[in-house]
Length: 156
Image (cartoon, rainbow, N blue to C red; front, side, top):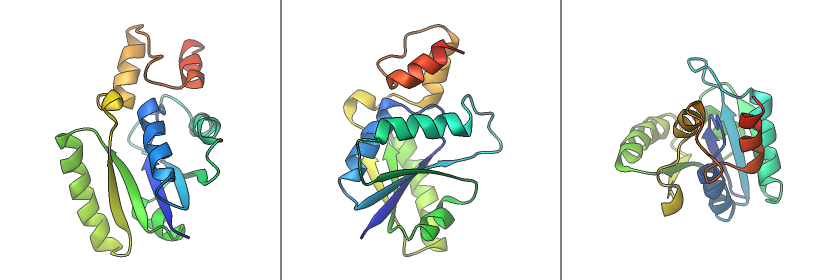
């Protein structure tokens, strides 16, 4: 059984994230979506809220699990016996960043591959930071996030 992880902060989860999750779930027997806590960032949503958003929006995918972790991505992959770390790529800038991280991960855990999935065109410009900026200025985000995330922003 081939497992992979899809790590991120998911603050908030976007339709672009969900698109990558759907596509990656077809490539692996088991996909663990892991929220990695970044102590240097102040999260908009709590860990529990992000776990809830991801679980509710992936419930229809029987081979997808949602977890949280505080360590290195590659260490989590090893703990899960994952053969791959899935990453979404929107641009050349993303690719260059992911290449650097993949090289370090390959050195630490040569048994874990990095698999890059290119963003679908309709999500190639969507990021959590852009969503937060749009919300800050009162813009509609319904085309970029699932309904429960949009409602959570409205109710803040």
